Length: 147
View 1 (cartoon, one colour):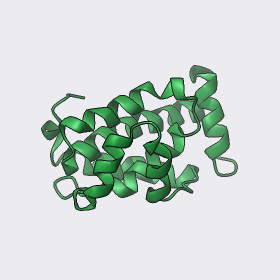
View 2 (cartoon, rainbow, N blue to C red):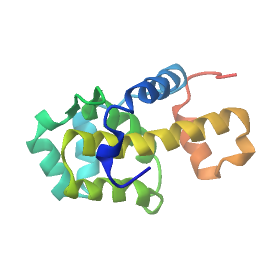
View 3 (cartoon, one colour):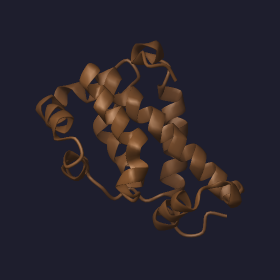
C-alpha cells in the first residue's frame, strides 16, 4: 500500500467487510475502543491524546469504516505480542501525526488488519508457514474448533 492514504479513498469498504466477516466467524474481539486507547497510550501518548480529542474524525465516510470499531479489531492481535514485535503497528500509529483525518486513521489500521487476517488464513490452511509468535496470538483468540 502507498503512503498516500487518500489513494485508497472509496476503495476499502468491500475488502473491510470480507476481513471483518472472517474475523467475526473465527476470532474473539473482547476489547472496547476506550480500553484499546488506554493500553496503546503508554506507547504513543501524543497521538492517542489527539485521537481522544478528535472523536468526530473516527468515522471515515468515504470508505464507510469507523476507526473506533477497526482499531480494537487490530489491537486485539498486537496487544498479545511483545513490544519489540509491534514495530509496524506503532509506526502506523506514529504516521498518524502526518494525517489524523478519518481516512488516515482507517487506512493505516486497515493495512495492519489486512496483514493479520492474511496470517489467520495461513494459520488455518498451512500452520507451518506462520511464525510461532503469531501462532500463539491466534491460539489465544480463536473461537472453538475452526476446522
